Image (cartoon, rainbow, N blue to C red; front, side, top):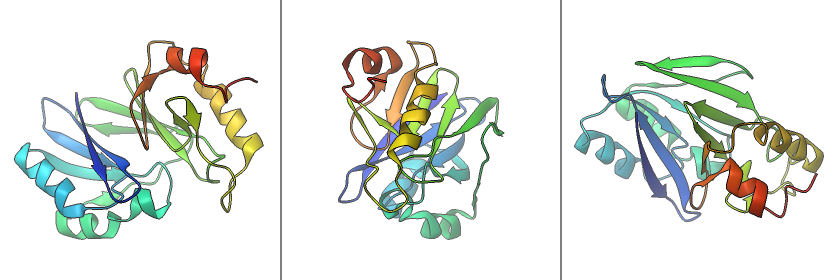
Length: 175
């Protein structure tokens, strides 16, 4: 598996390209902006786009969705809590993590968590926007903290982290 992070748009959203190293199939997570940049990276890396996953539907995470769907002739997959999606030899598991939005999701591949705006390095997603719910995000964060300490967290903004780092250093994880 290979993971490429592309920072896009004015809010510096992390768009991820997750590829099966054997088949070169790639899923695009959160194409927030700069569709040309995302598609160019896929082409240069000789990857085959299969589908798109969104961690949530805020414009900074989904702004380039329509353009990429049309240009690459792929679909945006919707998921339910517990769904498993295959990409080549990879299995992607979906977990509903409401709080930042009512329909926020995290995606798990091996020991990697793509957390969108649910969990950041030393932070959590805002809950003061429309549809946000602080009690719901706390519940979602508790679920995430049940994963092994070595799991890597790839957030929707900023740098990656680990479950262990967040348990130790995230001031919002005092339940």
